[in-house]
Length: 394
Image 1 (tube, helix red, strand yellow):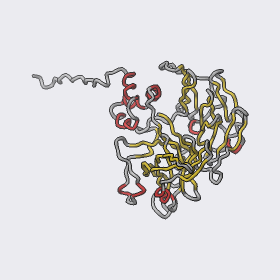
Image 2 (tube, one colour):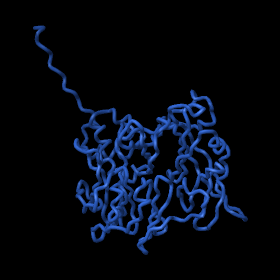
Image 3 (cartoon, helix red, strand yellow):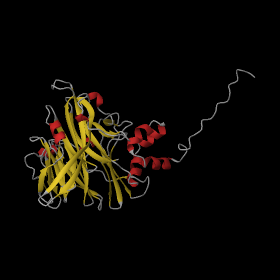
Image 4 (cartoon, one colour):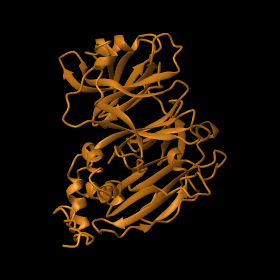
């Protein structure tokens, strides 16, 4: 036999899964918790592409397999643009309360704030994806071009249940930057605010009527809100609540067509709050404890059962950043210097998730909290700035 003759190469066999139609693969991936996606993205380039695709996002949405994920937006000193991170929790792990163990070597690494995009979190959080009436609406950032750093938003629409038929919806009245815009739905109308020039008095806030398919400008909320960074938008009891990075809350009443500063019964500290069920939850920076206020029964009190957590947050250099409604649990972010003394160049961002339980007796109501887990999720330069958070369904 001639040794110069190369043996015929064996054809690579496709695995049964990769030979399936893409639509079926997407449907299978959509049924898996997104905490497994980092490993699945390493299977092949096609898997990686599908996991980062909008099609998978839509499939999870239709199958009702979406999961609430925390996204935070930070301004880091070495970057021009804001950076997004998402909370990733390692699957099938027993999570710990790491502040109970002062030995840093014993801390778990099962929870992280991971960069977006990455294999852990391939897509930036979509500003908006909702069913409104018989249509679905998505507000997405356009891809940045080589000539601009902006990531402007556009809205797409399709009839409910019609696959791959997204079309461009009527354009907003002004261009908006994705990382700086908030949006929400109230009474089949889509409200969009911020993300444009602060001097834009006429169209800084606008509303899209899904019945008439038209945009309409809202009244000017005033320079104080326009010149601030927006943190969140919530719809509560028929009104639109907007919070800025200074933790101040504004409310727009669609019936009266006017803005006001949001009132709250917890007047001694309005800065760090979130809304869960029918209660506002607040971290009191004076007493260093969590409080609650029931808006329906007009009752209030301290969240009980968090003595160890409160002691930890009373330590020197500890700063509570924000509270969030995370899967109907109370999520708290705080930071402290990586090393004691305050001279360190880095800070650790901590995260805790707290289960809440309402207890009733003859005299009054009580809210009890149980810390589910707490750990360091990210280390950043001490000069970083926390801009905002979102809890999105992905």
